[in-house]
Amino acid sequence: MMEKTFSLSMTLLGHTNIFLMTNGMALRFLVRIVERWFASAQDQVQKSPVKNVMNLHVFAENLNKSHALNAGTLPADASPKRMIKVELSRGRVLELDSMVQTSFWSAEGRPISANEFLKTLFGSLPDFFDSEDELRAIWSKPGTRKKLLQDLNEKGYTNSQLEDLRKMIHAEDSDLYDVLAHVAFNTSPLKRIQRAEYARSQFGLYESKQRGFLDFVLKQYVDSGFTELDEAKLPDLLNLKYKAIADAKRELGTTSEIRDTFIGFQRYLYK
Image (cartoon, rainbow, N blue to C red; front, top):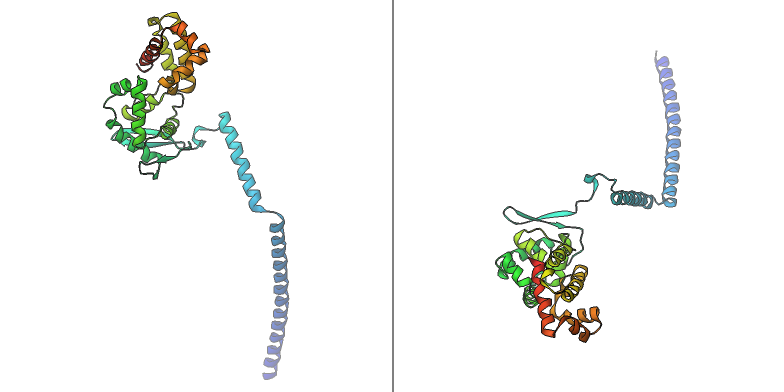
């Protein structure tokens, strides 16, 4: 019985050794395969900049989206969220284009957001005018318009910042008057060409030669903005139109008469 047990034990031990040897060889073989695969994968990563390839795919996809957006083939909800809403008061919200490059600074010289600039401006405008009628009266005359802009600048609302604000509300073709009125009184901005057309409807109040000059001034205004209406621009406009001040006076009258016509007609732009 003992011999049989010993013989069986030796047999089992032999089979166990064979199993261990066989599986050990298989394990070593598997390790070699994994090592070779890993080395090959590292080599492929070095030869093929996957990150750059992925970036290129992203770039191409974005470029295609941009082309599709420009062509109007993308759905509306695929376009970027451009407009941000700024709450100025209870029930009063103004939208700004977040994609416009701007540079806003506080009166203390601290960089601020467009949101903060707009809210501060909204709170300050009543210090400069109480109503739209008052703003219109101020803006209709070159002297008081210039004084208002100087006062705004001294309080930290520079011309360049107001111009940035005009772009952010998509009023590039409007007068700066429309920007101030829009912020202060929630009026809809008019384009300069619309204001010019209304002013032309009042040309019946002027003589033919005066109408010719005023029409020329309005074209400059539509193209370049309210700065063309500054009193300091009058000599340049006369020289541009008539080549010489003396020729302008022969057409339009005395210097005083020309000045009165130039300043007086501007009220029709802001009716």
